[in-house]
Amino acid sequence: MIEGIYLDGKTSKRVKARLEVLVSSNTISIQINHDEQPSEAIKLEISDLKIESRLGNTPREVSFGDGQLFISEHNDAIDDLVKNNSASKWPNILHKLESNLPLIVFATVTTLAIIWSAITIGIPKSAHYIAHQLPSFASEQFGSGLDILDETVFEPTNLPEARQLHVQALVKPYLDSYQDLNPTFVFRSGMKANALALPDGHIVFTDDFVNLIQDDDELVSVLFHELGHLKHKHLLRRALQGSMITLMVIFITGDVDSIDLLTGLPTLILDLSYSREFEREADYFALEQLYKSDIDVSVFASAMQKLENYYDDRESLDDVADDSTNHHLKTAKDFLSTHPATEDRVILAVEFKKSHGVDE
Image (tube, rainbow, N blue to C red; front, top):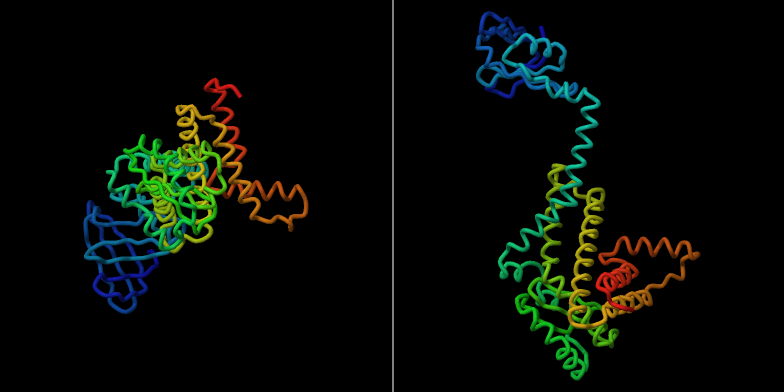
């Protein structure tokens, strides 16, 4: 006899009951004994008896007949029933698996390795493939366009007309070489010194950036960097990768509401990592184009150094106690930055020159 709860499959009423299985040839006689009604016996084929796999000490379900269900916490007794029921050969496989510590460790390590591989290899490669397979009009419609940014962030440029015409004439030959990317060069204010490329082909130089970078070659080097973002479809790929990471978190946790700080922080770090990788790819593209244009590749590093100095001047570190704390703060800032550290970009330019046999 196995103590438990019986449901008749017709109503939601639950009654205390005792289950007894009598096996004869290929049939089973199930005796349901409870206090509210007379005992009843149910005869059915062995194959019609369905016993839920054991999972720890959670209650087990035994289903039979026309939607009838017997639930019991006496797992050992049900295990004995399983052993004597040839039709239920593997119901306790989950219990055996969860009781095997070496197998649990192996499964955990394997799962983590699969997740890590998906994040570091699978997601980037998938996003790269999808982004480059989408038709051009899809890329142009994807993400925030200039019109949206004009309404929310940007303001009309205040650069003198002579300066605008000079920079426009400077970049035009290089833009003409990449008409397949549909590049459109514009100036905007309302944001600190910055240059950015939008998926629809717009390349934006802010007023502060143009005022900061007075050297023409340095301006061209940053233009090449932004063209690199367009060439490699970085913004589209980043959006795709962010969506894939979010879907993976939902798949693993099983609940949209669980995407909180605990799950969001790793997602943020991974997204920043992807961003830095895109920046390095655009950096190398810029160096290649500078080299092909017979422009000293060092101008890119000097432009990046000017940008770093510009932003450092706007961040006060007076409350930092000593140089050691300064160093740790800078390390944290570099880590939580979407761009590689400036010194890394300088090193990249130096290594590029060496690899191409360019004299200092």
